[in-house]
Length: 322
Image (cartoon, rainbow, N blue to C red; front, top):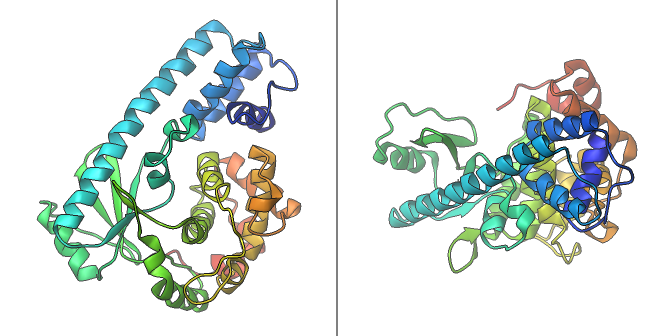
C-alpha cells in the first residue's frame, strides 16, 4: 500500500489534487496502518482533509481515529520543540556552542503544516566540544549513569523524550571512510551554526550531507522508516544552489564521493522522486532506480536482511557499527 500512501502524501503537499482511484475501506485501513508504522499519520491526515473537497472520504470511524492521531502528534511535536529550545538555552548558559540537527530546527522556522505534523520523537543536538566537556554537562543535569558511543551521549532529561548530544558530526563503519569523514567534518563544522532569532541550526548544504549519512546508518541498522525519508525531503527540496561549495572547497557531489555515499544517495533520490515528486533541480545526484527499489523494499519489510545488505554495501557491513 505504499504507492497509495505516496499519492496521499503528494495530495498533502499540494502536488496532486486527488488520488488516482478511491481505495476500498480495507485499503484505507492498510494506508492508515502503514502511515502510523512509519511516523506519517499526522502528515498524511492533511491529505485526507484535502480529499474531502473532491468527495473522496475515509470511512468515518477511521477518519476520526486518524484525526485524533494528528492532533496528538501536533501537541507532542509542540512539546518537543519547547524542550529542544530549553535544552539549547542550557547549553548556551554553559558556553557550549550547539546546533539542532536533522529536521527539528527547520520545523521551528517554518509555517509549513506538513512540518508541524512531522512525527519527530528524538531531540538530536550537535555540541561543539570534546567528549569530556559533554560528559560534564550531562552530569550537571543530575544524570548519574552516563554512557556514550563513538558519536553521541544519551541525555535522560525527560523520560518520554530521548535526547542525543552529538560530539561528532559523522561516522562510518569503514575506518578508512570514517577517517575522511572526521577530517571533512572538522573543516566544515562551522556550517552547522547558522544563527536565527530563536535557535542555531545547520546550513542546508551541510545538513544535506549529515542527514544523508545518518539515514544510511539508520538503514544499515534496520531503523529507517519513511518518516526519515520525508524529513530529508524537506531539507533538500529547499536547496537552491547545488553548485555551492563547502569550507574545504568540496561541492556536494565531491563530498558524497569522498564519503562513499554516491550509490546510497542515488537510491534515496529515486525514492523521494516516487514518494514526493522531488524535482530534478533539487537532487544531489542522478536517481538510481535499482538502488532505490532495493532500499525501499528493505525499509518496507521492517527488518534487516543482513546478507542482502552485505551484497549492496560490503565495505560498510563487514565492520561493526560504531
